[in-house]
Length: 255
Image (cartoon, rainbow, N blue to C red; front, side, top):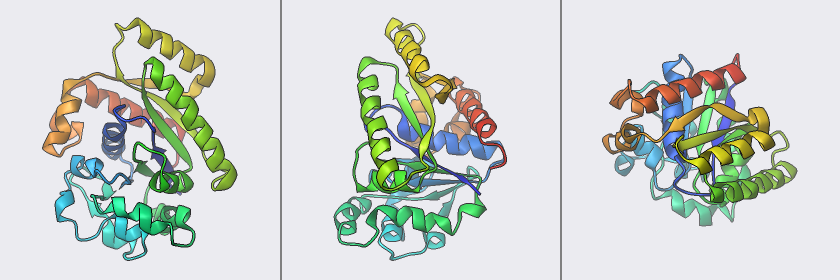
């Protein structure tokens, strides 16, 4: 049975989609069967995986509303993993889901049929607490929280932990934090070092040992529709995400 992981942070600009795409590619490079779910109407994880969001016949939108089966929506990428793609249509699901039964559980119920086909399912959630994010959290076994090491990130983390507590009580009692991922990290920053110390003090081994550095190659890769391994596999960013994939596999062996 696969490990379903929501990659989420209500704060934007923390490398969330970059992490979802490159972790999916890193896991695939490590021999894992991976499905990446794009739950963000911006469709950045879709484009970053080399799938044209403008040419989709079916998307996550159709899956959540019950207009298509998962196998009709998923697309194989040339990078070794599958993706459930999204585009702006998904923004309309927010309104349309409100009238449907079990609206928070649509993604969970869709994934049940395919979990045995994958080792890891990664869900790229939108940078907001909305019904799409709730669907992602309701479907997940755990969450990975990408965050920059800055003061406001700690405030946002408190809000997210409170959100997870409410989801656990109302929808998904098994969800847990799989790991906090430090992104866009600059070791020369005193503030970054102080935030890291606070994270390790409060969350202990929930903080991934792997750190994702600031890296221009990571920033460039999405504009070419590629994960970092297909753009510059020898870059510091690529090596970091491969290390993160290894760390995740070690945490959840046998997935």
